[in-house]
Length: 338
Ligand SMILES: Cc1cc2nc3c(=O)[nH]c(=O)nc-3n(C[C@H](O)[C@H](O)[C@H](O)COP(=O)(O)OP(=O)(O)OC[C@H]3O[C@@H](n4cnc5c(N)ncnc54)[C@H](O)[C@@H]3O)c2cc1C
Image 1: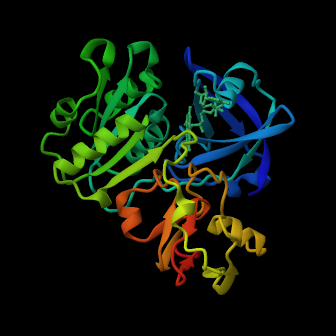
Image 2: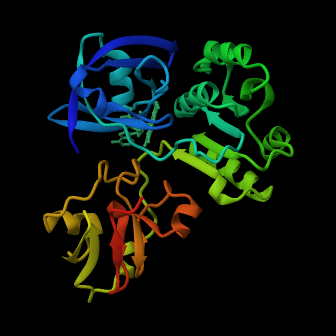
């Protein structure tokens, strides 16, 4: 993963707990930082004797006069989020990796319904801005916050509703008024709009509830897109105990070549590939960023943590290299497949 030194060109306080940070792009970096609405940047921030790698979704949209803006909400006792909110200044230089991510609008021309809670609005507002400008699709947004002081992009959402009265509607759910988001609140909001693309981003409980309501209403998994801002979750699965100790190697297609990779006992497929001098795409190694997602063509693996993948992804054979341990001897993974 390469990082590029980008200059902070603007910082705007969006709420007492969240700031938007814009990076200036020198000409030489313009094409590297082309992005799609809904994607995220990864930042490498100096921390004590080391650094912190953190991902932040772009809240800007690629069809606005080219802007690269993230919006960071403080997490209680969180290191990077408070560092960015407290100490970052215009003119500072931050190491930033190229945009990536699969939480992006499809081209299937379905209307879009989006569900956001808290800082989960960040990739969602990017998708909304992009879709309203570039298409004729209708968009509905359900946005949950604890109270109205916490609504990020409140003004922007009002403006978009005024600019696109027939195509964009936004329902705020404030738990201070309505109580927490519940199954019945979500069902009322969705109504009969089932043939849509659904995008969900927010805390884990909110996303799980929304996904399960959509599934109960009969929405196909392939039409549900989820971005998880997950924190390091330790899996309860004791993967090591499941591994067949006799596994010696697995096969991997990378850059159109098939490699036989010696398996290092107890290590992940990613660690084994890196030890064998193979460099598939990867970043956080914590099941957060999704960059090491590859397609499993044959064999079985167990993932320590697979929350970032949807059921549909898993059914398609997608696995996270950084979380996968081999269970069988016949594993073939394709790192080149989309
Ligand atoms: C794809 C993606 C996109 C994202 N987009 C956004 C976005 O647009 N906006 C946004 O605000 N966030 C976003 N995030 C989340 C972001 O990457 C960070 O996870 C978040 O800012 C918290 O990082 P932190 O360093 O502040 O917290 P950390 O320091 O990692 O702490 C996280 C939590 O763990 C606790 N903790 C930390 N250290 C310890 C310890 N030693 N013992 C016990 N508990 C501890 C802290 O109290 C805190 O509650 C995104 C994440 C992903 C994966």
